[in-house]
Length: 329
Image (cartoon, rainbow, N blue to C red):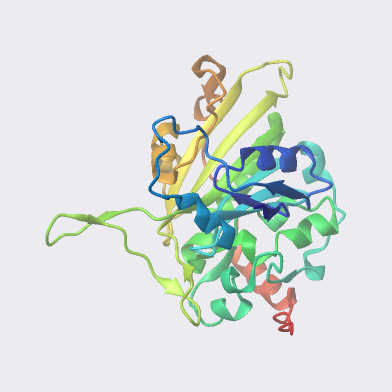
């Protein structure tokens, strides 16, 4: 019995080989791999043969239940999508002085669109954000992808979006943080950024117990509203010493709420291991501690306040909306 795993980014539990193949073959992302059933990391030597006809793996003849993660390869970023929350787990970007200096794209030609690679029942819809009170918050910013129109268009897939508080966050402090990241390319030849949502517990003032509580938008309610967002920044090859092998690293966790521009960026800095525990992700595990330098000791980790609000209003009028895809018979 064989199950067919479509790697247009569909990475099942334990499908590490498929993931590696996809990342190494970015220009041919759609591959079909035959596999008996989803592999486990290690065979269980404690399972003994017996005559009671117990075979839990027999369920796989009906299909593999998951979880399945939709891995998308784009020109400027790679994203991994969470079908349950209908938000990305993470989005990986790479920006350079050359990529940011290019001006080959116009945001006026981009439009928000549903990601049809993701099955319809797990896909964020344009109508889900309508009158929700939240912005469609880019995880990979459009401003990081001006080197090609296709790269910029890719950032407008809803699979690259999360519901974000608009005024005071997405249009303000979060935008300043994105600008800070771009500014790092003045001191480093290569900057890699991992961005994603978090759903963190909060202490109940009545019974003092910690609970995870977040809103869900859409009709029916399907898109989770993150309580926080994170950015992991990895700066490589300092302009002053490009041959340096170590990296400069910083991780930040920000609440999804209005933040005063007077707040120091370093107030949101967190240890990488704390971010790993909160996300369940392995981050920089192949880098020896001696090769990881504190970014905020090399540069001034401070936002520069710029007025993005008027631009955001103008762009919201300019950006076109693609109608929802027609249902297929």
